[in-house]
Length: 482
Image 1 (cartoon, rainbow, N blue to C red):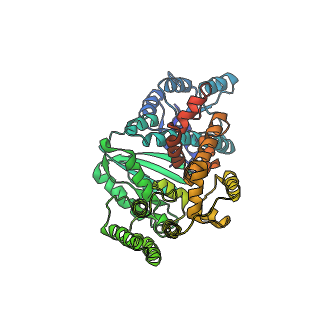
Image 2 (tube, rainbow, N blue to C red):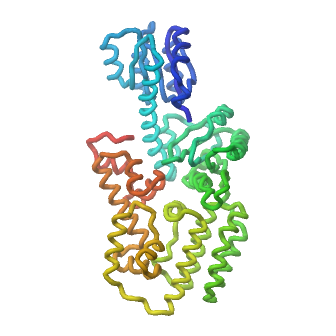
Image 3 (spheres, one colour):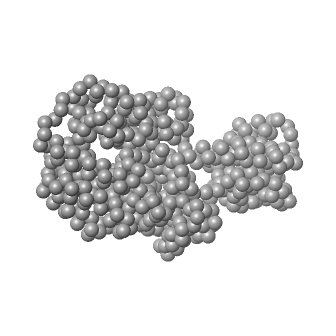
């Protein structure tokens, strides 16, 4: 989404010059409004979502510096660029001390305009990313939606809401411009992930939904996941999770680009669970592999997604635990954990089938004793904890039985394999946060989470604090990035 810009100058022709000499769209900006009266401009930027204000210094009655001062006093967070024909250093120093991000002199040259936009864009991106991280953490809390709107600096007064998540690219600006009746906010959800919050009437949101389905079919379009349309009072973490899961439609079907979240459970999923239960109860290894091998195609045919993959996975794990007994090799997982551990639904059910059949064999044979090789496995995991690891990969690498390796991890470390890897990631992340030398997104990347939302969720589950709250608690004297 383009950064929303407002221009202020008491001379109309200067406004037109500023509008045309700066290559706004090429650098990710769009001019939303322009004013020759700074007082009127102040009212507008205090009541509308704005990212950048470009203003002249010398204006009759209410100067650009007055505008900046009053805006900051009212809590506004948009960036300011000050433009003036006066070259006195005192003006520049006053503007920068007041929070302006840049300052340039008239007459403005094209090269200077491009340099200013380059610097301002970096500042705006950092601010948007930092604010997005805070909002994403709030969306994970019950009752956090209103707090999230407060952090965004605006109230969403619409009665109904729609959440849209895109992967790989943002929504086309032309599509957003085509629905001016909707209120909207965009958040950076992680690397190559964007979260949009739309507010409006049910009819307007339904029109947007239809437009998104059409846009997803265009060449180079992002993967798009759409939530259910809900009343504003019904906004919960599950509402956002629905759009997030839908956006990962490629996890089940690589050809799918668009999905509407639908939490209904079709009958064929129950059929698959019963077929697995029968095969396992009969100790029929061939039937188990066949049933599990058929599941991904069943999901694709039914237009089902990540939500259904997680639901079916956990139901099958529950059946296996009931028939084979509890084991560290069988863990109930959230959808984010599946995304972190597997590349596709095929891999999910293939590895689960191998685990179950291996457990079935082990139940009728003696378990080997642990050797010194386990120390080498631990060393390998500690050195590669920030990469995609799985029990099957380790078992293949170190020539061990995968089920036995799961049990060995639990017996030797007191944790399941996934718990052990998560502990390494979270402890390293906490060390990096306390050091205060990297942004939270950089820390998430370093410990193996490309998606900041999943990192934040795991961190809060482990430490009972969000990453930003942990940073504030452990760096009380330092200003955090938020």
